[in-house]
Image 1 (cartoon, rainbow, N blue to C red):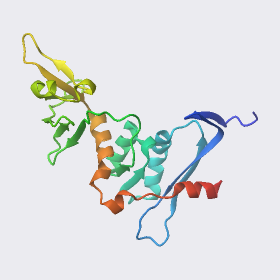
Image 2 (image 1 turned 180 degrees about the vertical axis):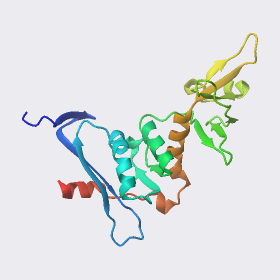
Image 3 (image 1 turned 180 degrees about the horizontal axis):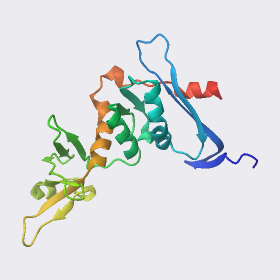
Image 4 (image 1 turned 45 degrees about the vertical axis):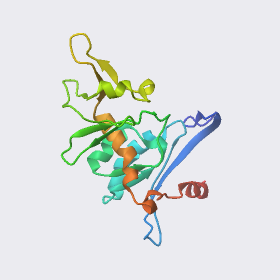
Length: 208
């Protein structure tokens, strides 16, 4: 009660009070010694993604040659994606937050920066230029969609009908492009590098 900066948190039915520490470490397997590059202590009701957004500029000041950053599932956010994109840092996320859609929609840019949308139904559709609201859309073959086993969980919306051709439309923007890029980055790594991870829990335990 006499510490005004301490907070309470209920995370997955586990309660805690006080503060949380956040560390970043190098994880280069060729290094004889890996280093702690950033340390901060914050109120414990601040999420990992919010901490990363706040610390990212400071990390870049200290390690200006930073070009890869490995994170866990709770670190993904639109703000973090924007910072990483601007700094040309590739973010690798081990797991993703929330329930995964069985429809498996993914947006990816090709060599010409043209977005393509794929799904578990087997379709690959070219994204259209953004409209005034900066949203893009991809129009799927409704004949294939009608027979798709993932139709009941599909995020597309039906369009057209009486006076125009029926189609299923998926709307997306820069937020989806960057988040899907973050999620799929790790799939492009070698098996050895894919499991790169600093043992930050042990470091935090030592610090505490």
